Amino acid sequence: AAYNLGARNRTLAENVAIVQELPKVPTIVYIGINVGAFTSAQKTATIPLPKPVTPLPAYKQHSYSQSKILSVAKKKALLRDWLAKRYPVFKRNYATSAGVLEKLVKVCKAKDGTHPVLFELPRNTAVIGHQLDAPVARYRKTCQTLAKKYDIPYVSFVAQAKLPNSSFYDLWHLIEPGRNVWQRLLSGKTVTL
Image (cartoon, rainbow, N blue to C red):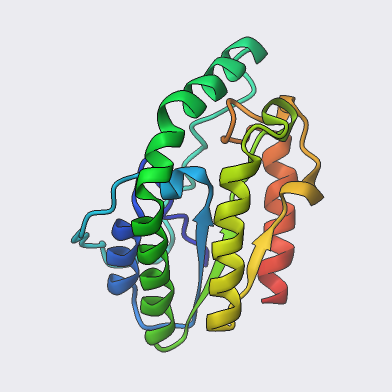
């Protein structure tokens, strides 16, 4: 069974709380990484999880769809806004966030049967171009270091997927058919893991 526990604006510290509450069963935990993971202020969190149910609840559709996507102009405006307002926050919070990311990996590794995987989330490179190269290179270096230190996978499909702008609602969120490409790559990797 696969559970997507992803949520908007959740911090790495909140992810630590979620992992601490996961049942003790063999589990692959994909830790989604992008610039946003290092932008939020990290605060300790307590998150109670509901008990798993069988059968699984009905599949909830994605929030983003090709029926409504942002224009290229709006996507470029989001990028300019991120660089002007969020990049300074990324720089300010980076060291703390990187420390919490390492704590999250340690919490996963300490839980029997839980296997963390650092996983780079999609990014609209068609619009972004090279404008986020510096923050992306910074978090990639951190992830590669943690992957080596804790002997865990670091997985990225950003280059391999070759997703066009039309696969994104904005700069980060996939819509169909890009989501189908991404899910196929992720499913294949999950099987090998």
